[in-house]
Image (cartoon, rainbow, N blue to C red; front, side, top):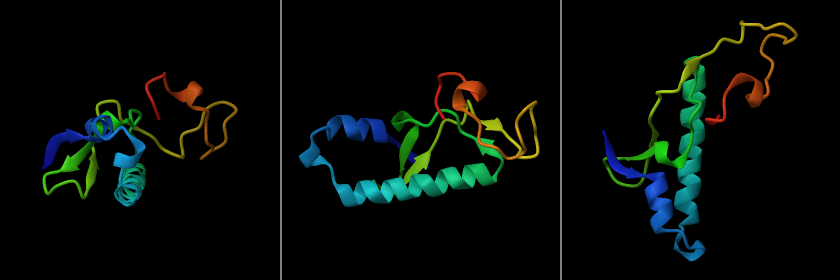
Amino acid sequence: MCQELTLHNWLMVNNRKEDRQLDRMRNWLAQLVCAVDYIHDQGLVHRDLKPQNKFFSADGMNSLKIGDLGLAANYSAAETEEGIREGAIVSSSRRTSNVGT
């Protein structure tokens, strides 16, 4: 369960450098990296990572969750395209629109 408060909302309220709590933000970043790693392990690419899609859990502001998987796509390292070797990193401009990564 998540709050309605997103990372975007928090950043808008705490937009001055002195208002931001670096230790808390480092913790959130570590959580997001782990979450993206998990999503990738499930064979998905989010494709719309932005502060508006990061939600604070209902237990307070200690943990962030990634939401809005509406643009997520399946991927497989075994899939190949002409001229691209298996498992290669591909330019985002060739694989996605300007939606995000």
